[in-house]
Image (cartoon, rainbow, N blue to C red; front, side, top):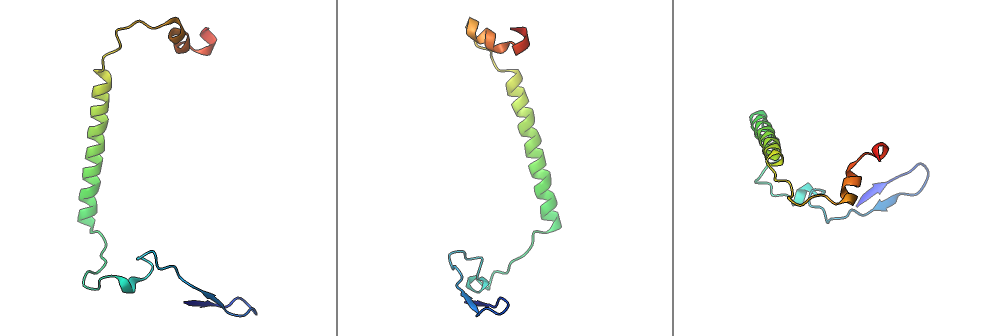
Length: 88
């Protein structure tokens, strides 16, 4: 419970919700301390994620360029939809 006092009003009792385990650090396992990620680990993670995203971009463009167009001709409605509004 937390007691709060606002100016001349009587104290307000606020009950905490215990559904989030991060709210109460006393329920955490004390044998496993909270540590920050090291600079070397952060650097390795950034290099890996950057490289993976670049490979995904290259793969996407490769697949987009080599995709087969449909063999069926476009209908007149689809051709009209493909033209800009001023060209109609």
